[in-house]
Length: 482
Image (cartoon, helix red, strand yellow):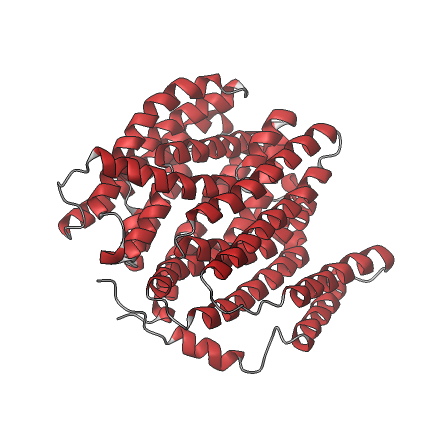
C-alpha cells in the first residue's frame, strides 16, 4: 500500500506536468492571441465551466465521496455513472439552445458554442471514480496525456489570432481522448457494469449531488465569475490581463488541489469510522495548510514583477499589479479548503451548500455592483475579489464549527488570530516600506519575509516539532479501499 508521501508525489508530479503543460500552453496562447484574443478565450472557458456544472450537477463531487466509502456509501458506482451520463446528455440539448443567447460579443459566443461540444466526452468522464478509489497514478497519467495532446495541437496548429476557433476544437479533441482512455481502463477493471439505475436512485443521486454542486458553483465566484463580469463591463483586453495574472495563481494552487484530493477520501473514511484521530489531524492540517497559503501569498507579492515579465513579456506589464492584488486569494483558499473538504467528508451537504451559496451569492453581488459602480477604476473590483474569498471562507468556517457541535466532537484548536496577524505584518510591512522608503524591491521583500517568519514562530504557528510530525504523516499508509 502506498504511503501518503507516495500518493502526494504521484498527485503532485501528475498535476505539475499536466498543469505545467497547460500553463505553457496558456502562455503561448497569451502571446499569440494578445490581451484581447486571450480575453476572449478566457471568457469562453469560464462559460464552458459553468455549462459543465449544469451538465454534471455535482455528481463528480458526490461520486468521489461515495466511492471512497466503498460498501459504506449510499450509492453504487454504476448508479452514479449512468445518472451522470443521462443527465449530462440531457442538459447538452438545453445548453445548445441557451448558448447563442448569451449577452456577449459574437466572438465569445462563437468560441463558447464550439467548446460546448466538449460536454459530450465530459458526460462519460470518470475522474471522480479514480479519485475516490485513490488510483492517482492512473488518473494523473491520463491527465498528462490530455494536457500533452492539447499542448502539441496548439503549438503546431495555431500561429495567429485569426485561428482562435481552432483552440476550441483542439480542447475538445484532448478531452475526448482522455475520457475514452479512462472509460476503457474502468471497464477492464470492472468498475463499470451494465446494471442500470432505477428512476428512484437517479432522483436520490441528483437530490444529493445538487447540494454539493451548488456549493461548488458558488465557490467559482472567484475563479470563473470575474471574467464573465469583466467581459460584460470592461474590454476583452482587460479580461486578458486579468486572466494572465489569474493563471499564475492557479499554478500555485496545485498544492491545495493535491492536498484536497488526499484529504477528501481519507477524511471520509475517518468520519465514517468515528476515528478519535480526526480532531488532531484537522488541527494540524489547518495550521500547515494555512501556513502554505500565507507564504504562498507573500511569494506571489514579492515575485510578481519578475513572473509577469518573464512569462508574458512587456505586453502584459499591467498584469503585475493585478497579480499582487489577487495574491490574497491564495491565503483564504487554503484555509477554506480544510473547512469545505471536512463538510463534504462529514456528509454535511446542506451546511456545505449554505456556506458556499451564502458566501458566493454575497460575493457575486459585491463583484457585480463594484464593477458597475467603479467602471472607470478596474483596481477596486480586483481588490474586492480577494476579500470575497475571505467571506466564503468565513461562512465555511462557521458551518464547520456548527457541524462539529452537532457531532459532539471536542473543539479543534485553530489559531486564526495569529495567522491573520502574521499576514498583516507581512503585507503591511511590504506595502509600508514600498510607499515610504526608497529601498529596493528585493530588500523590502526580504525584510517583510523575515518579519513574517518571526511572527509565525513567536505565535507557535511554526514549531520545532513540525519536522517530526510531517515525517510521520508522510510515512503513514492509509487503509486500502475495499
